[in-house]
Image 1 (spheres, rainbow, N blue to C red):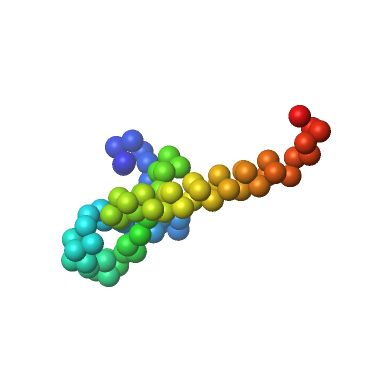
Image 2: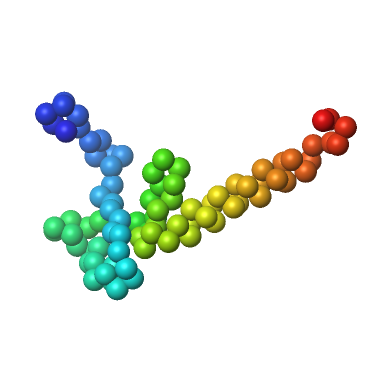
Length: 84
């Protein structure tokens, strides 16, 4: 990053990471101390509007997607029938 003259804003950047693996592999990760610094282990991350969880089950993504679909259906329900 420094070669491209980019810097991280320390006030906005938090040391966080996510691990991807099986439940047993994730249990081995000590997130309280990684290379001498404390970090937060994120359970899920969102990239390009797709929510990825640690075990790649897509449960969080499906939950969010169905919630958005339900909201859209409820919005369509409120349109009067003579409008179309």
